[in-house]
Amino acid sequence: MNELLAEAGMAFADLDGIAFGAGPGGFTGLRLACGVAQGLAFGLDLPVLGVSTLEALAVQAIGAERVFACLDARMNEVLVRLT
Image (tube, rainbow, N blue to C red; front, side):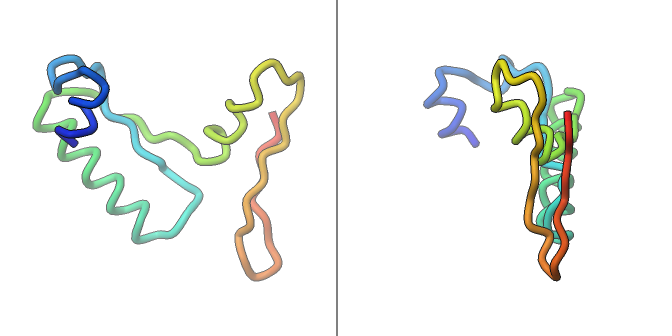
């Protein structure tokens, strides 16, 4: 993480909070991301925020009036977010 912050010209003191991908996604990966984010946030006394994967996809459609974000959930199912 130090390398990532250094590449951005930042330090831990410059952070306002810690965000993590809250899913949908694989259970183990989500738990790991949440745990790491909570640990960093606790150690740095910062707020933590879970970000929906589908909302993160949808926000990339800058200027769109309506957005249909969709992920393959396997087993002939999909995860959908309409904004």
